[in-house]
Image (cartoon, rainbow, N blue to C red; front, side):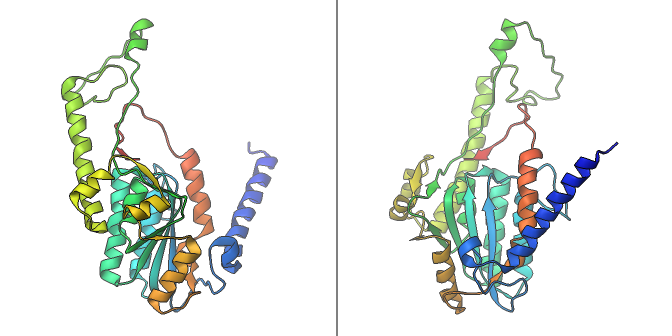
Length: 303
């Protein structure tokens, strides 16, 4: 039987979420990042998409309530179909994520740039690293704060091994598999030399894809790309010197810049419907409660 207190608590949470949703449409640029001329249904305006937290496809996501990378891709798909959008700002605050999700967001951004012919600006807040930086490469211009953490261009895969622990305490684990590599990265045994070679080849192949898109986007030489693609993290100021970003500045600087590019002025209208506070809450809940650890499943990450 459901307790009355639980129902009451759920109603309070729902009302709080709805209040965030409706109040978000009447706030100012100073308090939320939206400018005073922001509107849900602007004739012309700048769309804002937030890429926050780890980038991945969540286990729990639906067409009705997308989350994680699905939410970002859904927003980008809507923007691509909206002729009222005259520019796009990607607000990034993410340490990176999985390969497939990061690449898909990157290509979705590039598709908007190519098909809609609108300026796209990425603005990095605290951190835009690895997979998040990969996504930013789809933009025309990348902003970062002076002290933002930028870069970490690289690929990593790993696992936990309890082989010695299992032997010490007499734990047995029986495996019946169809192929020699089906239980690769199993925590119950050490990886063989052939498995380690296979995994390193996998990492190298994904890294080559990352670096190729990095070189194409930033228009730098392969040597320069290799020098800054060893997993290093840079400040915004360092990143500017190394051509990882284009300008140093915050969200308001990026908004003014894109407003001038589009002819909408220094304080351009912002189309809010792509940045719904209700979806932010759903995303947080999904990241908090929707994930599961599976130590036997390889997880290649850009971080």
